[in-house]
Length: 325
Image (tube, rainbow, N blue to C red):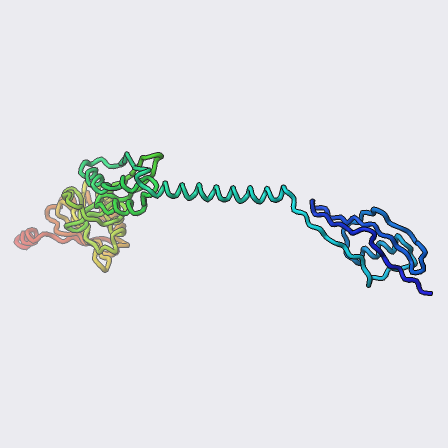
């Protein structure tokens, strides 16, 4: 006669989730259909398994040769318990988030009101000329009304840099009510045409009410070539200074052809801008011996020749030489 083994749960299995460990408390009694008892399991603690593994485990303990039908499996009821500690943690987290939100909102309201954080002192650094100082102070009117936190630094920086002689501005807040304004003024290197100036960085600007410095040389060149023209002006001035010669005017046209007029009236035709510096250096090498003694008779020096230069004489010299001939 076939025997069938039916597992019966003498007590309901309880699954507790109070901790990370998951366990099943079960009391199982196994009997045969003929009433013969095989064995009993009382208070056996089984580690959480799948249903199939649980049946196999029971079979191994009850009788190795008798198998429990997997079709009839024990019913395990799961009871979930939410601890008081868990509820307290959730409530505390919500309270903290609410408190942070309230603090941030209150801080934003306080900061957004300029009258709560007025600027009481503005310090301007880097300006020596009193006229420039006055113009900067005039531009800074109204800056205190913006408040310490609401002050829009990029906008004020742009506004101050529109002053003609101001090259660069840096603004810095100093807690709690101080504003530091660091100003870099333009340093003119030469006059640009008859109305403007060019600074040492190659930027062309209008003097804005100030007079043009008469001692500076003049550069006549397209605005697109301002940096190249300034570099050539500086290099040529240094070369000519070795013979106590000073540039009155440097001309650079669209074809990048260069002419230089010295303060003594001598015209130097240097030609291509890329070759002008070397040609000037070649002339300086013979200037003292061959040109300086007859300087008053020379109208121009043409440096555009490959292996030397040509001298153009003044009309009075030409006439005198014609009579002598």
